[in-house]
Amino acid sequence: MADVNRGNRPLSPHLTIYRPQLTSMTSILTRITGNAMLISALLIVWWFSAAAAGAESFATANGFLTSWFGDLVLFFSVLGLWYHTLAGIRHLIWDNALMMDIPTAEKLGWACIGGSVVLTLITVIAV
Image (cartoon, rainbow, N blue to C red; front, side, top):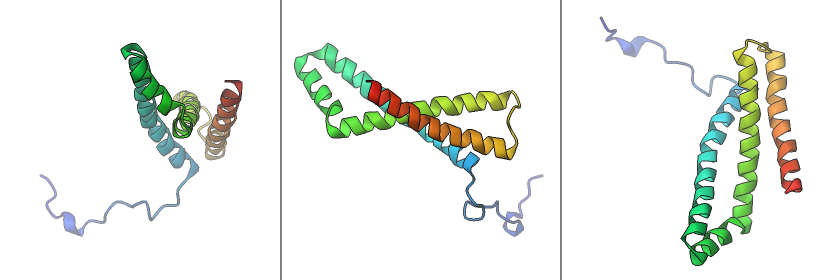
């Protein structure tokens, strides 16, 4: 039977109880970048749709995406894409039960963050 006396049981620990750890923060960041890439994909679809719709529609979409704000959005989209890719590789490593001890897991987290910054800069400079 279900426990109806829930008021006397302790609550689960909240975020204010625990110190944020790098592995938990990178996991949250992976989820955020995955959702943010959906928005980036919609912007790219809008750009292609506008190109197919005609010159006036394309000028509007292209004007937005090549503005300073559009450049900023696309820069962070590239950063999110690289981070999400590297975090996915990290999870593939973990799926094979490798490098799961805490010091190595933290090094992988820093490698994802640093690697995504370096790869983003290489991508932006190369293009």
